[in-house]
Length: 477
Image (cartoon, rainbow, N blue to C red; front, top):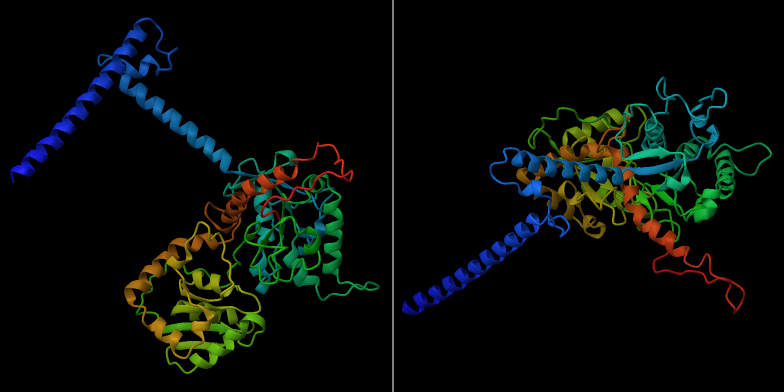
């Protein structure tokens, strides 16, 4: 006990000495400040202005301090806000590439519709799931209104040298859906391929493309079969895609490109007051069962699960009220299967989120929207395909998830669902704004590589072969 007492005294003595020296240092600093202040040299010496160190009898001192801190904070926030806005230069492409595909007819020399009056109508059904070109283009046009009514993550600029990214407003998904099978008389190609050829010809002739080789361009190809021809020539650009299932890594990859959500087809579940016990179906799937490529797991799971009494696993399509049936089925289910099909992703995941049905993702190659800022494991369940197709594995695993864990994920679904909502005007935190922010996060790396590529622009030709050296930075796309 005596040893402990002596030890504690030593610790206290050291602490006291430390405090003593700290007090001496502070007093020494203040004494020098007042000496300098008395000679009028405080500001020259780099000290704060005397107003922030006024004496106690100055009744305005606290207010002045608070005002200075508030003003500094507001200026900082304002600067950060300005930096966060993506500046986008959008080509004035002829209407045949965008709203003309919606049968919109321009008036006079106008390239764009008057979005303050009646918007061109986008076709429904399965067309809607790949309609992101429509929503992003509308958002850029809305940013130019006198009182913008959009979310504000991106604004259109008309000087390309001021832009962070060059936007190509080609409705490529709609072009594929409408024209991929429409042969043009006297032509070997269909209208969709011909539009792609025209786009490549237009872009590669622009000064903006020549300046960067297309690396600072943003091209939308959300439908997996869109831009099949043009992408081979436009690949240096940043693509916005649904997934990378039909793209070689040399053309599209997670480093340079952006994954965007599908537009869900089932209705959003407003005022959802359901509970674990009020959703009678344990596991739900409705869609095409027999698929090629990565979708072979669907038929395996169909035979494993079709006889389970609390599982709904059946063929379904958009025909004959399929969307309404899917809406009702998902809302009455605890978990919804999202299994890889012909491609790693499908609209089913985003339908499940809208219905607050906890997604069970069985797709090993799937890439998810804005996963660099959103943790999907908080509201989705991921199961490796090799485990999912083992007998009884999946059903036993899902049944082991209790009410408390399900409720936690269901609650999180309701918190994040707005990140996947496309709408006009767009709002802060919706799908349109999240996509712009995802693009903005690509810009620093894009600019780094652009600057790298310009290192030898002004250097004289090499004495070896008369050619300038070609930059080959690491991970250059």
